[in-house]
Image 1: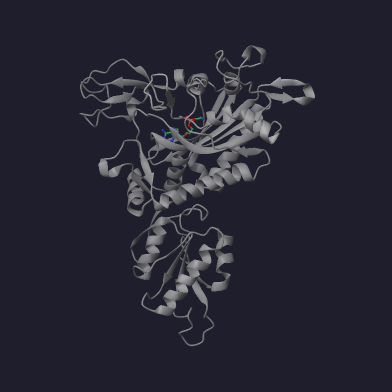
Image 2: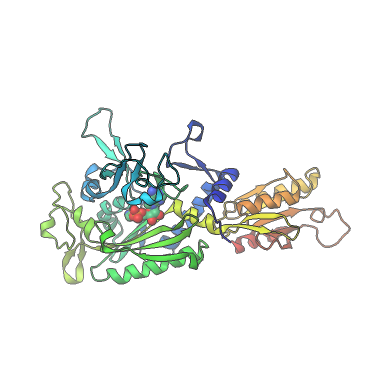
Length: 466
Ligand code: GAP
């Protein structure tokens, strides 16, 4: 059974060092979280798997790491200055601030069982609240010298379309992938890392000829659902597809399908896959009147470039269409933790908490545990095995002798370590000759089964299973 409540995950994450509240010792900063020693490993593993699948295993993808601060005009012509708004209302009585379209998710500050508007409180009319954070650029405070922190990584890709095209000589269709931070001044950040003000996105902008867009869109939806299931371990029956209705589509989208996951807080968006048409490249282009752009864009006197592709066989310039899979890293982590979290009752009646993470995602791959910490030959051998493993590929390995073996196993189960290696008297050949010298016990996290493996075989044995 996956986690049933958010509290189970919040408690495990804090206790074991996955995720902490941001700026905690000063009372926190709402909507920010810090990833601890295990959290950063889990996050890096998720991003690595995504990059491997979407960049290395394809022939049609390039990578990019664009800056977070961008010229402010990017956000005018992307449409974000005008449309990246949420409807904000205030309660004159309790002084609460709420998203007008999500009152049912919020509670009155005075009557926690009532939603805003259900109490005696008087609500203001909704007003548009732009969610982009602003920051000053340069030393002189001047109202014109500001930049926004990017609310999506996508625009860094669009404004670099020509640079990537010219430097790689790609032919359509091809994509550009990017993983990076995004910032949104959410009115009500909530539900742990589900809705935060600073988060990471894994995005692809996939450029194609108009007319090819719909099939490519469908292929990405199918491929990315499979990826969440096969590589990240999410259950297919906890995933649904949401066809975003036309009145809810973002200003750039012709069609968007959201991959929804059943989190402990209910079914919510994990990844959005949009058909952005030629809106963004068209909107960021100069001389738009000379280009054939199907989307409705504002005239752009500031851009110095036409973001087009020369279609040699037909001898014309086209503004490519774009398919955009956009996933949140933090929501991915929350889904993976939800799915992996398991409480089991053992034969002796004890409860075992185990994170059944895919081995490739596990923060720690191997724990090397000495059966006796005051037996020098056992300790020396265990430390030698740790060194051997940590220099074999990318196996994050730990050594732990701070408790009895049973307790050490439980600790590793709780953080999802797939393999525990125990070094015992047989390993060092102390017992009568039984053929077990230079072998160790490998214990498997999920089944708790143990088997004997030769030390020299360990790197290949573990790497094969990860
Ligand atoms: N470039 C398209 C775009 O940004 P989006 O649906 O607004 O689309 C994409 O965001 C993904 O980013 C979402 O599916 C979600 O996983 C993640 N995301 C968006 N806002 C978030 C927030 N406030 N906190 C955490 N993740 C968020």
